[in-house]
Image (cartoon, rainbow, N blue to C red):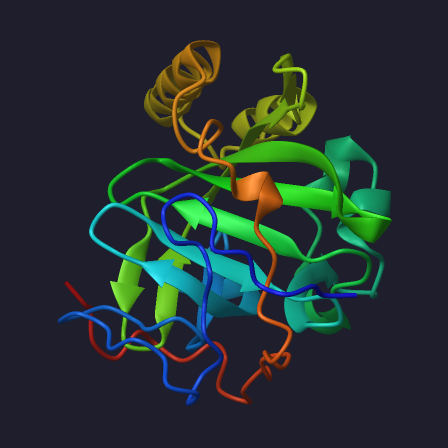
Length: 241
């Protein structure tokens, strides 16, 4: 499925871990490193309910780019009886007891781009055969770096951006329900909407990362699929710069 790495804009070619990869700067991961991309539970801040092992593509002061490969073993939330969250009616989706389950990411992989301090990340999706599908702006708390990866808190509301540059809000119904259920306060909702408007302004200006050519990027075919560690939910042991 994967094709040869392309050294296009901003030096996006990456080297497999342990294969003569470039040295990382202080507090940075090297291309090919495996880290965890985690989200805390919105109802219980000390608990992680989403965890995805990813491979580092690029880690600089301006941008962290990671690749989630097809078939990656992940952690996701489910209702206590095992019902997938998306199948539960919206009115009770966030109030019924939950647990975490292991699953695998099927379909095409996902490239995730995150700028330090910015309250969203941008994900790239492809159809089979590397036909680019869309960008997805995931509104979230600015990510905190630790020795094993990054942690964040999802803000429910999202934006989908298409190759013809038109965009649309996504999951507004979930955002509204989360507010009704007390998972998002009025102050937090205003901040999320503000972040969304800032992201839309970047889309309208066709600024980075939308103009940066990442849709032509391909993962290194030598990369393997990162494993999900048994202690995937461990407390962050050391924050990185």
